[in-house]
Image (cartoon, rainbow over all chains, first blue to last red; front, side, top):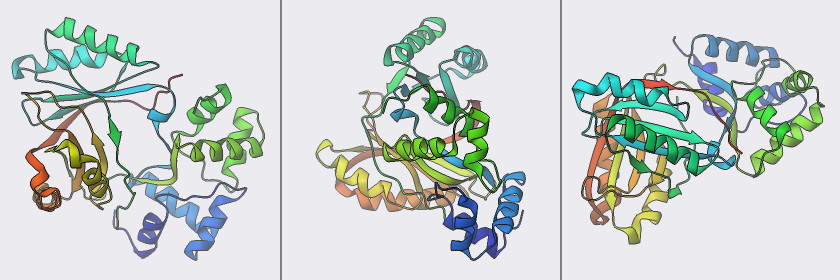
Length: 149
Length: 159
């Protein structure tokens, strides 16, 4: 989809800061020089065309009392699909990506407690015979949201 | 922040997005059988506590032409890593930036910065910029390009 000037203005201005008030679309639209209806119609289209993944709150799972840990494995290519099936079958595994490296499988374990995540990693190690490298966050550096279009 | 049952219901009801209606918080409130004021009060409290990072448009990098994503990783001297990590996080092309443990000798890297570009050449140009910023504090580096999504689920909340 081709973005026009109005789409770009909306995307650049509304990656955050959407107000919490009775008529937030109207308030946001006024700041952009648009009508409320025009803004919601544009957002509808941007969502339908999948330019936006979603419009709404972006939560920080780390601050919700649960535990999220990034982990990786070096999986032999011949076993890759089998290992992916074993890893993905665990409900604690939230994301799993193939990456081009000796450590070629990267996933996130998510659970109510660090112990629950650790138990899932141990079970994956037992089921695959591979080492799960744990990469828990030691520190998060501030990132601004700033994709400019 | 410890979320209570009502907070968690609110998170589950809104994590896929806000309704595109004139009074979206009221629409959610009706669905949860609480008042619009309570929805707004709880969202504001979660935002103040950092549980809610922000409210707005979440762009689809891939659809916008940002097709290459590289997890850049760096072995940065411990003494300088936090100051440099803060600087790297502020760069426009970095979407996530974390300090994580090394696993020596296999994995010497302690600074992770996710970089998005239209193609790998653009990501490589950003790596060059990062290299210049990190300077002599950085002793080794690599980039891991993603080549497939094996699993992706929505937010799950603990507690």
